Length: 110
Image (cartoon, rainbow, N blue to C red):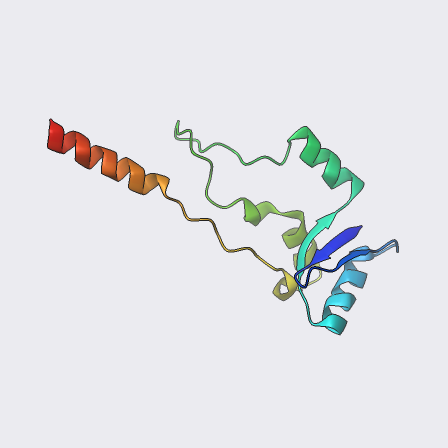
């Protein structure tokens, strides 16, 4: 397993329990886990099976939070160490504002 940490270190863990080793590394170096890569996760990314899903209400806009189902979150939660997950800042969701502005412009024109 290849682990990228929040201090920009990238370390390969080849033991039988690489996530436990990554947690130990975090504790020793006072850092957090940004992402993990395994051959299976890389293959899934290449196949697109972890792509963001489209919202169900007939909207073309993606669902808001793809981080919830991340493998890093699942692995750290099984170890009880979610405090080591380096979550990125959520991207702003501007499309509701665009839609509201278009409605306002449409109502003002009509």
